[in-house]
Length: 221
Image (cartoon, rainbow, N blue to C red; front, side, top):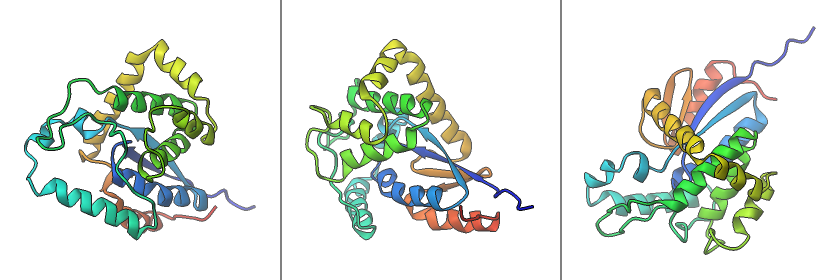
């Protein structure tokens, strides 16, 4: 009798505002589709919400390098790239001061939680990440762009919005719980992949994650 394949589980901590989270997704999707791997997606708040002190102590060289490297990483992987217009986070580009209210980021995060609860979180994140980051759309937050992205993920945006409106605090609490779980897993940044309690931070650690999965019996579907 043929034994069933062993499915391994990777927890993925992920943010809509992180360019590296966007750049990682096609490889994570291929891993999930081609191998016996389940992805436990945990959407977190952007760093500007979950760890605003990070920007206060940032080296002046960090942001210019980050901008250059994220564009380079996307090009290396053959992905379209432009920073979102508008930015989901309201932040002064010169001082990096963060506005007290963050309606766009909170909307995306809560919608992501609602999508995850309906079993389509990964698909929703991938569709919306492309909308934000691939450079094809200006004004992703207006018109029908988000609704069309949700539809590509097999979801109805109006239904997601209604679910969030019924209990925004619960959706916000789910994001905060994921923020805490990320730190408990051993890191503070995204994307972070966790397998068997071992964190792999950054899209450039994907191949190392696969190496570890192979050690644990990674099998094709």
